[in-house]
Image 1: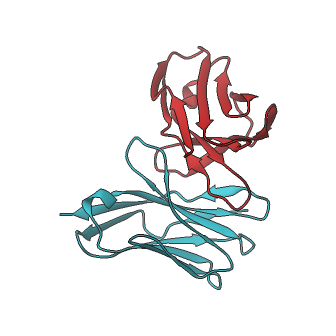
Image 2: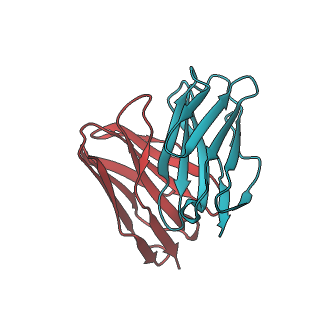
Length: 112
Length: 111
């Protein structure tokens, strides 16, 4: 069966520090991969999605970037974190059109 | 633009009763809908989906109803249990293959 792993589960970082959140999927190949941010009491905001290795689409201009160095690995990064980057970050995968997205358990990021 | 919203932000039900969570969507061209359950501190968990060529789909203790005429989606949970307490989201997929998520309804089951 397919599984998705995100780490770390929680992270506290100072303003201006770099960020790297990792997401990996097991049990499938060539998935569509997604990064979302979820603010308290608000819906999921799509940040990036990828349909293949090295292919990244950005949905909103921001202080973050994403990379897909391997088929089942998706990384969310920042060179210098801002206070506004605090939030709950979710990675998701989907096998194809007409299929649901499946989410990891998220990373709670706090910027101090 | 897209909008996916829920009629009620919170819902409390007695254990054993049925729960109904509603969702409105605005894009009549959306062709695929999903319900998710999110427990505190965790990611959304897929519950059930429905395609636009259907108006009802049943799972284990859950039923999703789709009314395309009024662009309304509902999730019915039978015999609600304490473990059903969570936030429930609906999501719609448009023909551009993008998903849009509602803000969620918080379901509390009273023992």
